[in-house]
Amino acid sequence: MHENPLAEVVETLQQATRDFLSVATHSVDAASEISLPQMRLLLAISETTGSSCAELGRELGIAGSSVTRLADRLSGSGHLVRESSPTNRSVVVLRLTELGQRAVSEVLSWREHVFSEVAARMAPESTAHVVRGLTAFHQALNTQSLSTQSLNTEASR
Image 1 (cartoon, helix red, strand yellow):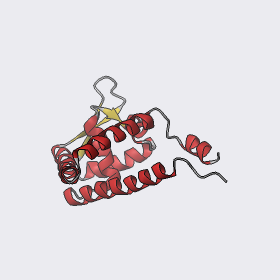
Image 2 (spheres, helix red, strand yellow; image 1 turned 30 degrees about the horizontal axis):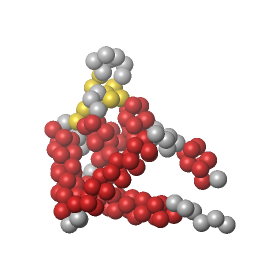
Image 3 (cartoon, rainbow, N blue to C red; image 1 turned 60 degrees about the horizontal axis):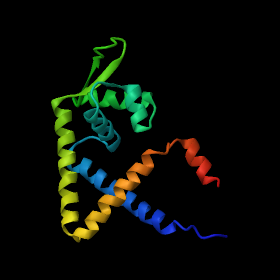
Image 4 (tube, one colour; image 1 turned 45 degrees about the vertical axis):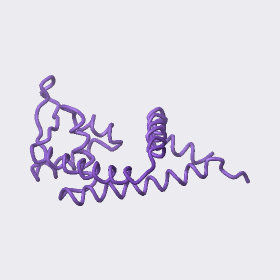
């Protein structure tokens, strides 16, 4: 049986995932009264203009119907509105309200504060390594589909 040559990298990424998830969860809890999945949708809407539920679902890796259910709750709480697409009136697009924009801003500000504090405690060469390493990881991750099929294929090897 071969030892995984990437075991240390995988374990470090597992720990980073737990750390980032903790920051994400705490930032949403501290800054708003909505759930983490709802905040993911608000963040996606804030980064795109006039996206449909289907487009947002593809971006988030969830079904369009799941986006619709999240949007129902967020519309009811006043965080977003539904509008007809200016280019295709049969398509509904989602837009943040002022309340939704404020929630996104508060969460991102909270995260910026936490990340700045952590980075300030690190040596400058370490922060440079973090930037290079996470940038390379992000680029590599975006070149591979994270579909269930590709994950099942890799896991069966």
